Length: 80
Image 1 (cartoon, one colour):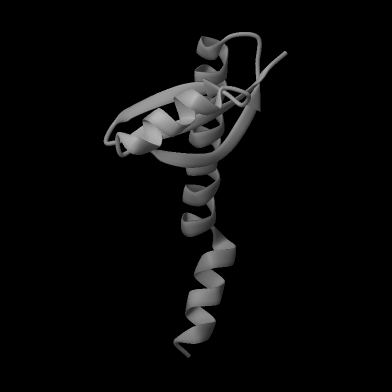
Image 2: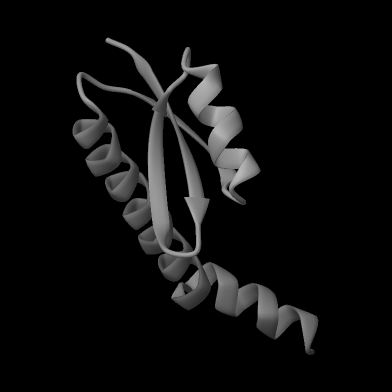
């Protein structure tokens, strides 16, 4: 399965096979920024779906940390 990399401009996410350097250069020249995630998938659509899953899980983890008891304990300790 090929590896896919992602480029984002505003709310548009473009998927490019890692080996497709020409498309990557074209996207960068159009103002797209490379995302850190790289995903192995059978199709570009599957890669985008997996990217959405990863980003959603990151948001859930971040929210759980910020609202969790560990974070609250740390903040309380800092302000005592």
